[in-house]
Image (cartoon, rainbow, N blue to C red; front, side):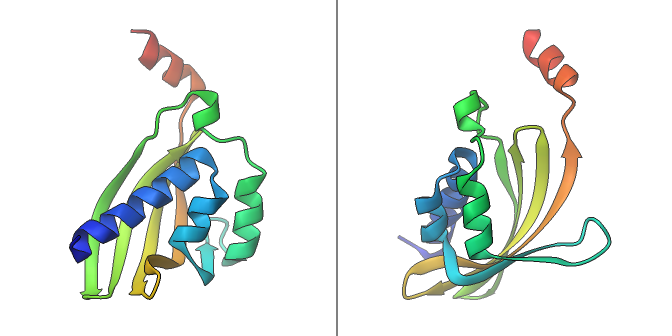
Length: 134
């Protein structure tokens, strides 16, 4: 497997972890010391991975509600052969997020060491129903 292929596999693990609310996959793809950040409300919110893991474990997964996985890689910027910033878009229920994921390749492969997320949009359920009824 090439570095690029391994990184894409790690990104796919992240997509699956969020779509299925799978804590084992979160554990595999996030470094144990990683943190998550958001500033959508005007102040910086920092969440350690342990808190995020508990939050995800308590969620109803989009997959269990029959939602197809909607996730895409927007950009991969290699800072070096062992570090990259990945910009993604992912939908979970009605929320569409854009994330910047900081990946580092270490002894456990590619892992996320930081995540900055932004709530890009909220899908109107009426629009969603109209779009799928056609």
